[in-house]
Amino acid sequence: MMRPDNVIDFQSLIENVGRFDLKGKTFLIPEMARIGAHMIAASFRGFGINAKVMETCKGLDLGKEHTSGKECYPCQITTGDILYFLKKEQERLAENFNPKDYIYFMPEAEGPCRFGMYNKYQRIVLDSFPSLKNVKIGSVTTKDGYSLEGVIEKSRVRDLRKGAYFSVVVSDILDRLLWRIRPYEKEPGMADEFISKSMHILETAFEQYVANKNFNKILDLLDEILEQGKMIIDPTIPEKPLIGIVGEIYLRSHIQANQDLIRALERYGAEVVNASVAEWVNYTTYEGLRSAKKALKRSTKRFDLGEMRQNLEKVIGFGGELFYQQLRQKHCYKRAKARVDIASDHKVGHLEGILKEEDLYSFDAGTEACLSIPGVIEYAREGYNGVVNVYPFTCMPSTVTSAIIKPLMNKMRIPYIDTPYDSSVQPGRETAIRTFMYQAHQHYKRCGRKAH
Image 1 (cartoon, rainbow, N blue to C red):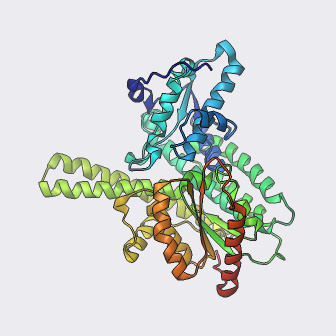
Image 2 (tube, helix red, strand yellow):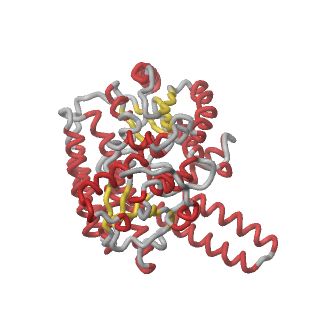
């Protein structure tokens, strides 16, 4: 790939970023949560879409070369991932490489987070290479709750959305199974090997069953995996301090980006529970419902019948979506917890209730701080022995979380640590984690810990 002088075509930001029909295209998905990315890709393949999870962090040097350093770390990683993938495709296909065959998936969010600008920036980067100008960036947004309209036939949009959400919940449960059994595995490596095999089994199941909404077939397989997984636990290993993780969704989910933080905590004697991916998806729907209700109230005061009708439709739409998500998630966790004592997930409405009760922050301000701040409080109430806040260096929402939570944790005498990340190794990281875990062990001795 030869790069010419940069010329920004702002029209490209409109024409080549958005929702595009995925039929006949290769749909490129960046890896965030490894299991989640592969399950979502399998769900899309079940609907006849050629979805592929790109290798991650192999192109980090490319990502750093084409960013200034002012962007947050996930932007560097994902920029490198797409450039590395396309570079390898050009080498593999040579003159048969056609950029129009690919659609790169990069969603966005409303509000002050820099994530909302990733796909625009990456559009400019791709446009700087003549051979990559026609690679489109497929984007969905939190503004409409990550609607999938426009990427597949209209008659199949709802089924695809339900299948994709179901894959997220199943992925979260598989992750929680890993974190539950790995600290107590009979032999080193057993849990990782088992979960990797299980992920591939479930990928095949999603491809076969999700388009027909045969979710019970997938859940039956998940039941078997949970039953087999708990056999990896060595009952003679004593219970360990329980650590909860909150923070920016990409960093806390992406193993390479957070330098395998969960395993580092486990190395010093922790059992870890990370905030789920479904929690963020539920939040975007919940926030869409909140906004629609406010808009309906305003239009009702003005007695604008047209706007009232539109806003009422949005309330019904978001309300139905949230009801489905919560019901589906509750059902999946109920089945899973009947077999293995994994951690439950937080309900977004309950998290907002904690913020109102404690008067700490407002959902009106938005960002992941809406989830992280009450998430920490909930961990504390549930008897966790320590909390970790994971985020990109200079991340505004997580810095806000830290400023509010740190004094509260000190007052409650619950160990707390911030772990910001960029592409470097943070000085003193191992010492900080080891010290934090010493404090968590002391808390465990004083207070015990919750049961899942």
